[in-house]
Length: 445
Image (cartoon, rainbow, N blue to C red; front, side, top):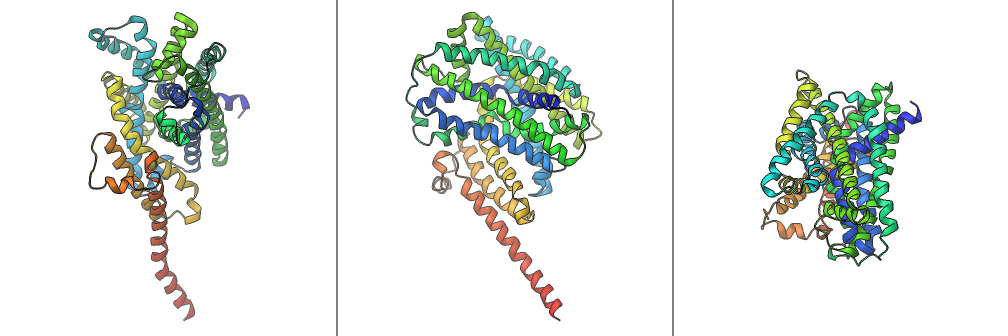
């Protein structure tokens, strides 16, 4: 495959990753981190870029993607985990969230919709938005041409214009970090990276990239892995550069006021820097970014569910995904975020442990006990953390959870994951010992 085609596949992957959360969270991080910006953004990039890249590599190394990874714990876990991941990044959370952000940033500011008419405007906007998503998703083979060659370069150029203008015009020194970033800013940035949902999205986008490469004539496994890594590096580099650029914009905006979230900050910055034209540019950026992500997620979900249910056509699955996403999108952005963030706190540690364990698969000969032990203890801690964010604090176990190493920075699952993996390895060794001794006795006799 030519280098140019690899570049376009990488840009396609970037456009699928780069959605609502990728725009909102880096500038808000920059505003909060202030003078602690660099360690915070490095932590953010580790989970928002490094982890998705590792997931893509892990997916490329196994035959059936995320389902195979999950099946190393247990076949039923593999199926259920994969379905939950696809539903969460697709019609239940990821796609509706992106559509809502497109409305909030790309449409609503120009009409000043009052609360009485917002619902009607949202309905009309999402109807058109999802119709376009549906039409493009019906032809996944054309995605590289539409997104890699046209939409992504346009999106990147728009972000460059906004960021460079900010660097030139905003010259106030960074403010001191807020309380959340005053200590362990790198770890705080690491946790902030969860909100992009890109590690979960990578579990789904892996199948899109592999399908695209196969359509271009790449069939051999090593070549598929190599080209997937190249496309991932292209997408990851572009993501990291954009995160730094809009994160710095957020840090430079902090002396000019306080903002409730990243979208409010970017809206203020674009208007301050470019007037009405800036508001139009920002709306254009948000709409493009969220649209491409919704198309990528719809295609990924469509290909997966059509694969596990061969009697159901890809077109029918895509239709159902867009309809469900449209209905949930009309619940409103706040409701979707309130549900999705606690879910991410539960899902991300499991994804990190599963993917990390896969890279050490050979060292413990793929023992399911190692996977199961690590995932079980990780799941218990992350489940508690997620329930706590939902407001369901388990008083009986909370003191124990709070006593775990790194619990104060949201990483209480790390040590339990290691303990569970080691325990699984020990159980596997103990199980094999009697069999080994029996074999030695037979050999001696």
